[in-house]
Length: 85
Image 1 (cartoon, rainbow, N blue to C red):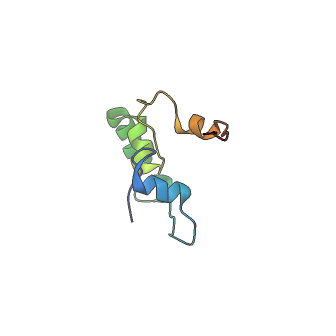
Image 2: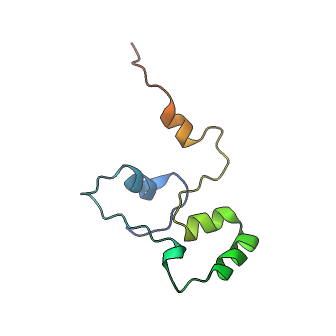
Image 3: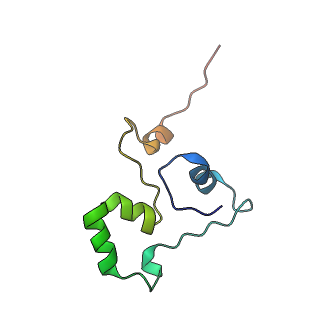
């Protein structure tokens, strides 16, 4: 599976976040490691497409869309208690 991150949802994010190293090879190559991409190009994209677009498409980040009431990090930090039935 090859993709750019598109939010903290879907199969790609689940495989990246929770997949065991033996299940898949995880490779992250941000634009800063590609000598063919110039900083001027990235800055122009930041101005025209926005910071979230650059972070998602060129910096290999899973960027949330900002529409959630509670972030996934906050959900992950919630204490889990046993529910009695």
